[in-house]
Length: 427
Image (tube, rainbow, N blue to C red; front, side, top):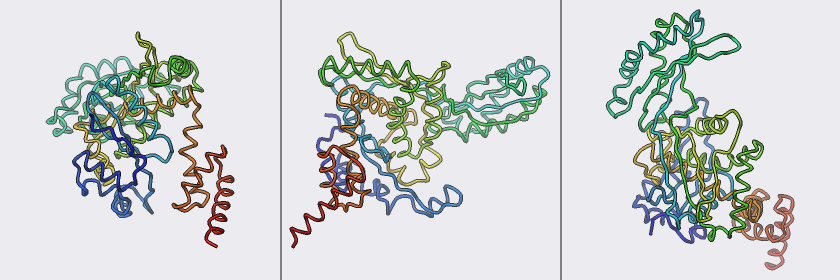
């Protein structure tokens, strides 16, 4: 049985879950210590990461279970404030077990930097001059980061594009770089800064911006899973899932929410592992609009057997080295749980989580409606916000769900009733 299966985890305490995680992964108490707030990122640590630090924001970290990615069971930490996300992803991963879980592919850890050149009297000639010196520019880029080159990465290509803007015709030179296990921003930005003067000499123009692009369309990851019709509620539910997904392909209003569901899973893992949520989100939404209109990042289709096959393709610029992945102890602990052997592997796992979360949401919408399950899990948060103590929150949440009205004002009424009852019993 894959180690990612864990029945009854929702009924355990956080301490019991940590103990069970240690047992299942072989990680030590020290390895996971930073998941506790008192041992995680300190204010002093935060002050070294950003400017003007005044504190640290706590975000719940949950454990997604049941994932099989390319034949390997994996536990996945997810940092999110939204109820139902972890449970939904775990449930969808469980449903995918019958057909082998998630299968993934990747184009590799390739990022690009852009050097913008303005003031060109002959932009086509300037482009040709850059391409004539392609080998020279690649060699110069690789001299900037010999360690990256030694690890098997480095500059793979130089591309030159003519871009018409309302301010005139610009030349944009791309440095295409294999960044290995880094997210890659620092590596490609440094290369662009270093090569900009030479590009200016070759083109006779003025180099302006020298910066990576977050449109990481050379760092794509795909994930795929098949969900058996018998396991997801029958043929009618399967047809409704396919119809719901088809609307997301055709209607940008629906696509925005559909893709937000994908990002519920993606961003939660990206954040937990100390990676750049804004870079990943920007790249994914740009990818959704790559053909000129905004559409779904995933596709749902019927297989020859009548089951539902779900696929997703996402840019995934994440890393294992540099940035918060190393400076934030909680991120290090989360990476220890996932235990990816490369940034590429981490990206594949993240894509699988995004697809699982997406399928779970679409299935809920097509079957019982999103509110029923979401509000059941949300009720405890509402109870705590209304002032319920830990020993009261469970009962207030239960009564909220039973009443069919999960709102703060109703939670306050129920809390008052509960306290009155307990006061009377005590008297």
